[in-house]
Amino acid sequence: MGGSKVPDRVLSQARLLGRLIAEEGWVLLNGGRNTGVMAASAAGAKEAGGLTVGIVPDSDCQGIATGIDLAILTGMGEARNVINVLSSHVVIAIEGGTGTISSRRCLLPDP
Image (cartoon, rainbow, N blue to C red; front, side, top):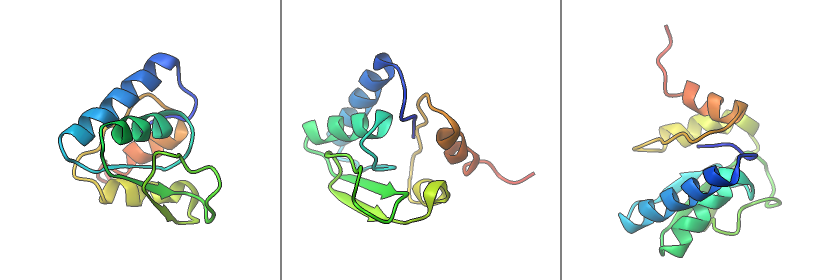
């Protein structure tokens, strides 16, 4: 999980993380968009021969990262973050904005 508008250093970290995930034989699951951490992590995973899944907030294929193998179109907007979190064995949040915060909130139990 991470932002769509982040500094280059964060994009480099996301790309490396995607690569490491693929090298372990794990599936990379993210928001599927062609921006920021989502695109960079998917690109890194693909460079290492990994499988990538994007849980896309939209109901069409526009704006999907080229590194995504399987795009699941939800039409749910940021509400799809619950799917991202509940479908993951491990969640890593990299620098981001409100969408990243929303994803992290799904990890916390209600008070």
